[in-house]
Image 1 (tube, helix red, strand yellow):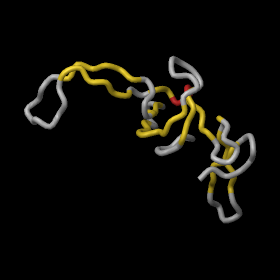
Image 2: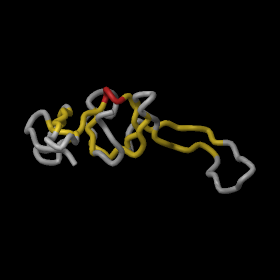
Image 3: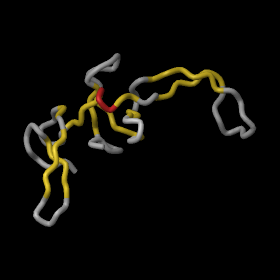
Image 4: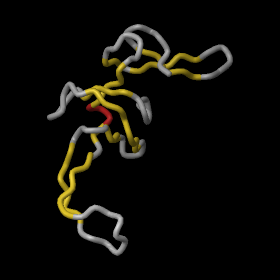
Length: 104
């Protein structure tokens, strides 16, 4: 998957379009990511046996499809697609498709 945890992404479609935030969880099998402060949903949480959980109506982030977010390049500060460059030693690194710089 081209987007990883702790990457800064920009939402490119949906109600939160234009929002930039950090990826907190990645679900590669489902092709979805959870972005901090994006796609907030209200959930009715019932009290459970352990008293540590918050009860009532809680607001939390729901996963969004990975196709609805674009990685923000730290060098050119633009939302971009991700490419790969294979180094002579065989290691693979992600690169920005706009400026060509490697993405850490």
